[in-house]
Image (spheres, rainbow, N blue to C red):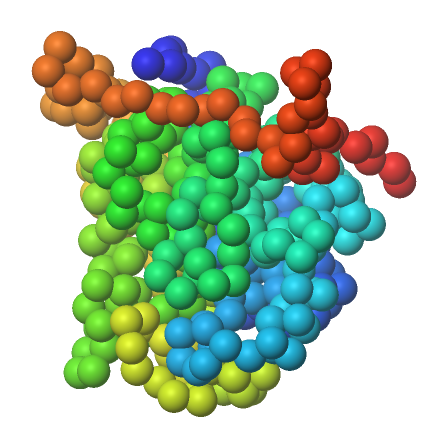
Length: 344
């Protein structure tokens, strides 16, 4: 278990993004991301979280229509490459704002896509980059699996604060959650797409209120951390652009408009802040007292005094698996593993 100790900095302002993506437009998506980062810096945010694949937007057409090669090709071309000029533009924005940010985007490596999250520090350095370990349901048609290195879900800041992040239904993998808590998550970024509230004809399991007020809120209580939902919204025009209305129905709670449910939960489950409604574009803000984590864990620390490692334990394979390894033991590292210089 990672011992994060008692952090020297107690109160932290955190922000959960709720905004509409610039659908299938990489440059516009990067520009909007940078504008949100700038706004967060001006509002004193210290840790900022973005929705799942905010760039170039979550492709719910894969749930509502048959495979479309031309749509996927356009999506591939507007996904972001780690180390690209667009990627470094975001890094510069984070540096200029002087904040920590977890950026959610569709990462392209050749012809393969990943549901990615990059942890960027106030110096604009990529401290960690990870990919969703198991894409959900028909996402597997579009995205590849994360690997051993992506089991790392947390980083620790210069102030000793541990920031963690997971994508969407990674929150429904109990062993991954436990491993996540064991890494010491104090401020958790839960990156979600746009989802419809529960109601007639809406699959309850993927509805926004279940994903937020049940699943992400449970992470706060179970893990003893501040947990923030970072969710997207969509407009009717966006739905048309993303071909969502083709045939609504199926296993996902796909909205035609709205779908935002950003919120921030305390370790005891209290709702600290919520978006105005499912249509608004805003940064949901809360000033959090990290001592509340210790107050909550006095009752139940699931990776501490409330665990039974003598009876239950978890084995994790965190070994990177290169696609090509040579007989001398060397291999070509992923471009995502290379820390590239940040130029003005």
